[in-house]
Length: 103
Image 1 (cartoon, helix red, strand yellow):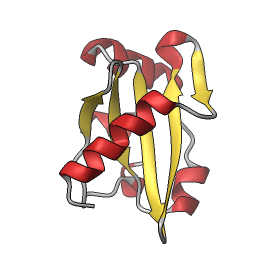
Image 2: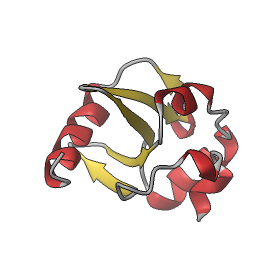
Image 3: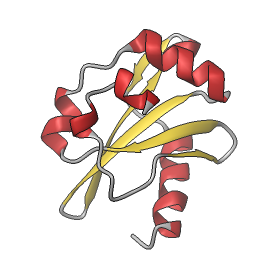
Image 4: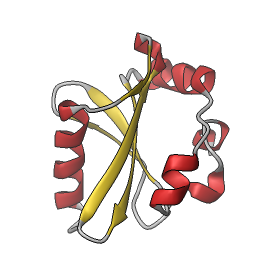
């Protein structure tokens, strides 16, 4: 799939679907298998920018679970934000998405 050009495909968790979501600004949510893999990811910013433009989204919001916590990384190089430390818009969309997934 096209997201494997942005990240290593072995890191993507297929238990949850990759999906475009929005609470005002669209992001692509991508589940990652573990916190270790999430932190070790080496994003391909040019490819993320290309895919973001194609799908008309702000960027990609990667997430994983660790016990009761959800850990995230957000990439929006199309808007000159390679990685954002915190994003309420994306996390709000993630909460709605997880509710729909019966998490």
